[in-house]
Image (cartoon, rainbow, N blue to C red; front, top):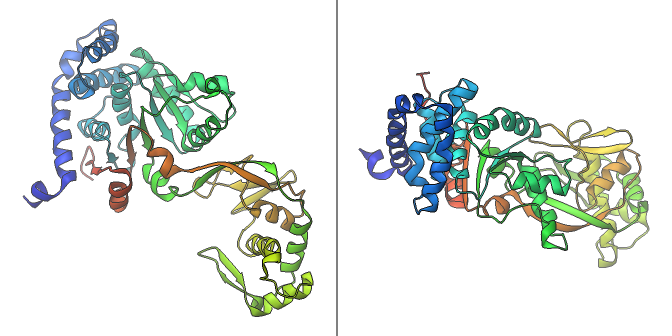
Length: 395
């Protein structure tokens, strides 16, 4: 009774459950349709939308259509709990479904419904392997129903990317979406932009990882060289002379600073009277980066060295981020530490965080196995409820 009165997620769940029951009631009717009749539903739905109906009006029938199509193409028929999860996402919420309960199939129903409006649906995964797999397997259901399916990959040209973005449903990674947005804001002519305007809908897989864990991670595009490598090498040589008592370090917070003895050694090494005089702010900046590079950044954990280059390791996925650099000179400090060629430091030309990027979508939904613990953050920052979907069979 208390849940009914005070828990908004319980009310959302019950609303979605009623809709799921209506979808299941149509199962026999839709099983009896021929392939041509089932495929014709897409045109029928679009005509109804043009006539003034809303996505909510056609939800039950659209879900029943996608559910039947998935069974015919993949041999997978969504269970009631998966239909509930799809409804929860359609209303702009997060479906918390335990691992193995079929989140990927759940996304097919909600993506199909929202793609009928013609403004595009983005299905966001954490890596290109998952994006490619889902675009091929789940995309087959959408193609059967007459929708176009795109796959946005890092190595594509601008023309290829634009073609993928203008499909009804586009599979991509969060990284690539963010960087494409930044690149679009650096082009000279509007027709060179690859993304559509933000009237569309995004479904984020592993939503807690992308929208909470990585939320404040800045995506940065840099360019325009700043300084040469000499000071990086000097700062690196200096910090290698330090003893444990010359600095204070907090490994967990990734923070390190010189103490009194370290400052005195720096003043003697760089032959300056007062290290913290405004004239020497550049030296302090390089020393701080060299300290982080030598005493906090770990080789084969935070980065690897391959073919004479320092390559960042993504801390969330463990994958190599080829072509990416740390900003503010940290990358060059690590290169000096590893004694490889030091690239010229660059200026930040464009930057955005995942949090700010994903809040620009007209509608945002997500799915994961673990989101309830961050429910307050999702509610306050993204205005999304976390709807816990029960397992299909008792655990």
